[in-house]
Image (cartoon, rainbow, N blue to C red; front, side, top):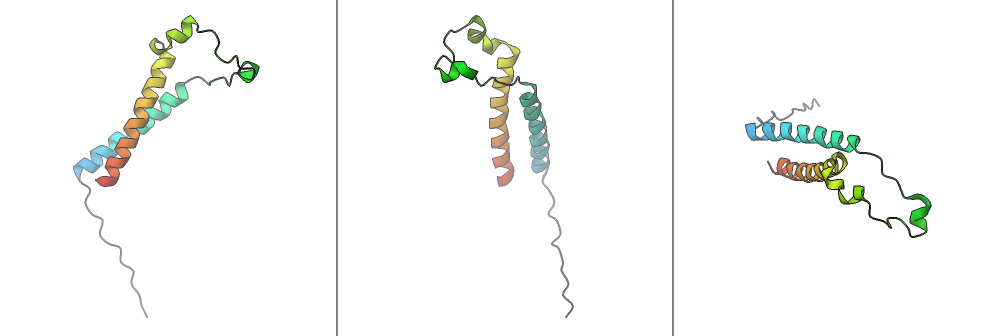
Length: 93
């Protein structure tokens, strides 16, 4: 009763799969770094409980998209979408 377990020979990976895997890994690292570079958000404390969370719109709030913080937030969203799309494409390929 000698049962030999043979593994199937690995299929050769297409160049497209290899390129997409490398792009996926780079996108993962970029997304991780963009998330780690962001500042920790404040929960709001007592002001948010009392309903005074964001009463006054300041100059900083209006121009946040032009700052480094706003840029990181935007690139995090773009990176997340790119990562999801690449994951789906890698499953298909």
